[in-house]
Image (cartoon, rainbow, N blue to C red; front, side, top):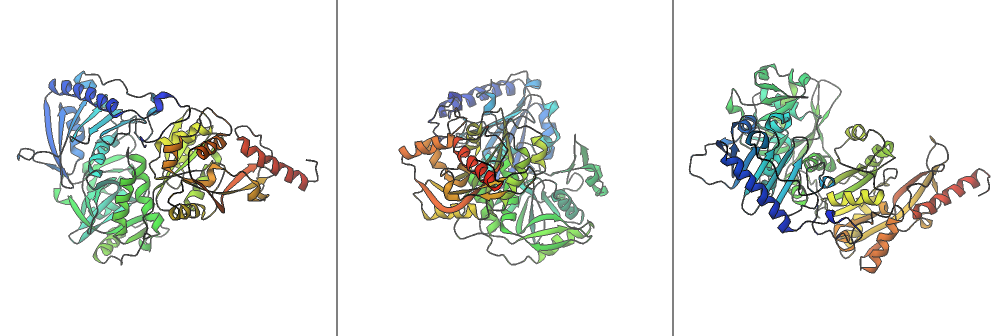
Length: 596
């Protein structure tokens, strides 16, 4: 979220960016409560060494220490006289008896990812995670932070498997390192970084390699550093496995603990030499399951490699944004990337990985010479949930590697969680009460981290190449704030019939939001959409833009397919949409020989 966004239209005051003073005051309040909690408990100190950073943990009592410290792969002696780079204080209310400060923002400012909307300071970092009921705060200037949970006894298994990932990611990113959702294993010759969404086989691949004698640098999250020789650094020594997968590794069963859904394995309990603090990377690997027993290697598409590394990292780490994407892209641009097609014979997987490390393929130019910006794509959903897979497919078909897809649940009718879980890529899902299209888009804008922002209504589609055409225009015209193409209307007369092109793109509305690509600065200067308008919010935004010097360039290309069922009502459609809808109905009635 950018604190520069000017909500110049009528917006509730509690959605305006909070001042630095407000955020500093909240941090001071929490820190004072932290000091009281620490004073009333036995303090336990632990030091971690991660990517050259010494991180000191002060626990208020033994409960959190017992639950969280065993997950770390990098605990070092804290009596060697060295000062920490970062100090974190950890406590809970149930044990200490100290209450947390009241929430500094209303509930609708708490995002699914953990960001506190309106709290966007670069210095005073903050996040709240509902799943573990934890608050993380960090003063980036002083290197002092707080991690609080309501009750340590109720922490979920995933927190105990990967604790403190939010504040650690903030600190490391600011110092040229990046927590990334992935796994890393290696030998004395180097190692591989394994990326991909959950369920593609990262844990199975990593543990199979460890069982075959390789060293373990991490699974689920590892820390990346770039430069001439990219490397992965260990943070956690855990892996989370479904029980049926854990059964494939009987030699490791002694280290397994049980979670609510998965089993958590701590690598190195019996053999610390299995852990690798740092691995020099030689190859980046994406995964997919094959049909046979053998494991094979295929070339990897650039969008697949970068997308696999970025998607889940961006969706799980509060405040992750441009710096996160840039560092991941830098690492991947320096290494050869392949797809490992996993066969059913697990014993063959380590041999394929070892062969890649010993003889990596030659690096190819995966990325264009011109740095590509991160594009946040916002998809509002209310009553068109069944269209969502098609909308996301049309976004992915743009074959653009640096995408952040944000689905705004505007009081969806239907099981949105199930539909989102079945999508081929992770997306950020932002739930909210129904407030209309403008309010849903504004929710997406506040959560977006990209330099460029695009919108796609759930029942519309982007034609192939739409994003590339709009981006090329903005690249070639640095003064342009918005590049907007034309929209082509598609309509069908029967519920299960085909969508047919109706009329000419020149006859449709000139300001379809889904046909445009916006620079973030356009919203900084012109404000967001007027959430009090249920109709014509697009017309209103572009009318304001014309009076404020926003440069809107029209592209003579179709960049949006607007799909309409001829028998639908216009409820929820803007005035601008009702004009092409009437055009479509008239065309269909003429085709049937009926009067208009």
